[in-house]
Image 1 (cartoon, rainbow, N blue to C red):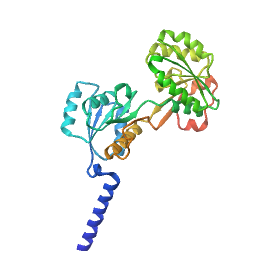
Image 2 (image 1 turned 135 degrees about the horizontal axis):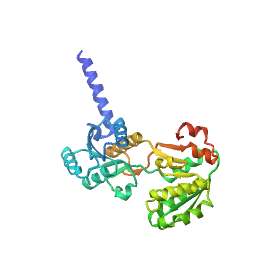
Image 3 (image 1 turned 90 degrees about the horizontal axis):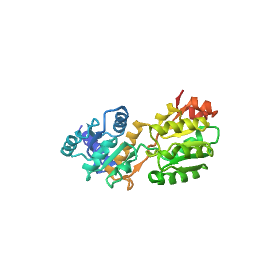
Image 4 (image 1 turned 90 degrees about the vertical axis):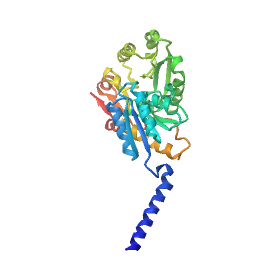
Length: 310
């Protein structure tokens, strides 16, 4: 009996040693993680569920409830908690984490344009909700049977010049051609749009707050529809307005992706763990009525993996 007990203890010891070697010292105990949610809404809750599905750490969740004043109480509570890492869901939560926990590792998700909010810091990594142009163009290229090669875009040079340069390179690599036209304010859009629509096969709506607002977006979609030019949009919310194709992210998987980053940060396994990366799971959203109106056939394999708006 004593010999069996000894063997069992030896096996337990070896198992613990193996865990230490594989997962690092930081996971010899359960990591202590503080989670800040910008609000209790479905996408943020899905991201949190995804995070928990990968990470078996001790997790304490704080909800800002869209109230930045609540942030002071949350910051005080987290400081007393002394977590190993902070996971921020949404822009407000990420900004509060950045400003108050400069010595702690921070991972975020569900943030649009994270560099705009100063989240490219040495102690911060995360998943941007923005889908890179190369991903958008690749999905555009494979979605329809017709080859839509000439892509037009209206942009503001002061706001998105670098983004358009990178998008042009991405289009070239895919055998597509991006034809950008500059507009310095939304007043320039009607004239620029008339010029663009005569020379392209698809119009790309790039995220640009100077060019795109509630008034201009409707005018752009209506004009493109009249010219029978399909539109690739940066958000599924424009699908019902007449955009042909848009892409959405999987919020649950973004949370899981953030958890994987958090594990790498805690264990310092990868030198590039502190970085901002795009979401990996993308879902095409297709307006079937618009596709039919434009006479565009959708590839059968794409239909199976897309959300269809009918």
